[in-house]
Image (cartoon, rainbow, N blue to C red):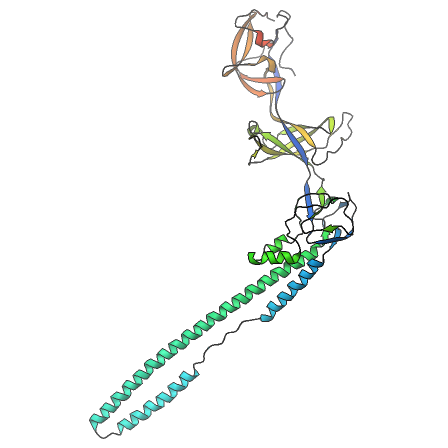
Length: 435
């Protein structure tokens, strides 16, 4: 429904007026976007070697876990053998036992001393002279006390020695355990690398063999290497073959005999079972975009057809362009398109560019005027209201703003007449005719 009635025939030729009515205004934010697949996984080579078998064709649709190809890697196999040997050596160490010093000598000395002191006291008791007897017993008591002190010192030293030996034993055992943990981790990494030589699909989707740059493998050994101490990661990586950080890709056809390096991109698997849109919305418009907002989508590859979608999420983190502009990524669902004849429209491909018209605000049955009727005067929006054939400037408050119609939230009512064409040629008090 248009927001104005028929034009006045009494207005000058280059100025048109019309009566204000109710209408529906849809405010639209346009933004560029691109098609995104449900999931894409890039698979890289886990080690240096060569392709020994290709089990799928380019473009094949596979399930997750499907065996795609095999890599022959003598370096990885040798690394596994070395890791097993190192782990076996560490396991043979077993428990570390450190002995202790026995107290049997001190115990035997105690027995001997007690007997000697007892015999001395008996002998002293047989001395007839009382003074000499007392002196002898005093000397025996002093000797016994001196012996007890020396014995206590010796036992304390023995305890300290055994405590130190126990600490050494614990430290040695901890070292042995750490070494075993390292060899086990290295063995696990080597086993993972060899297992990954049988390359499987990480997700369900369509396979594209070779020719893909960058990416990281879902079945590489990097996560296993990360478990090793930093001092051992370099050695373990060299044993596994390659740096693991390469972003190279197979150029040309991936076939049996094709040499590959650790980290070489072998193939991609793309799941197109559900397509979405990633749209870049300028910071000046992002506050009007919320989940649930519907949109019309036009693709450069499918001119003349319009698809529909709806906002599912709005990123919180901004994206800054090289020119300093700030935008936010908005994600939308994408519905299947339909042609004018009701037939299914072509299915877009991942990466295709699109122009997305986000319907951020829809106002129904509101006072509305054509966009050409509204002009900016200083800090205010205004329209020319025609009263008795004379144009009068009136400030208005706007609501939803569409490409063709604009909602007037206040300042104007239905059945009033406004200038809808040639507003820039009107001045206050000009005779422009009336309905």
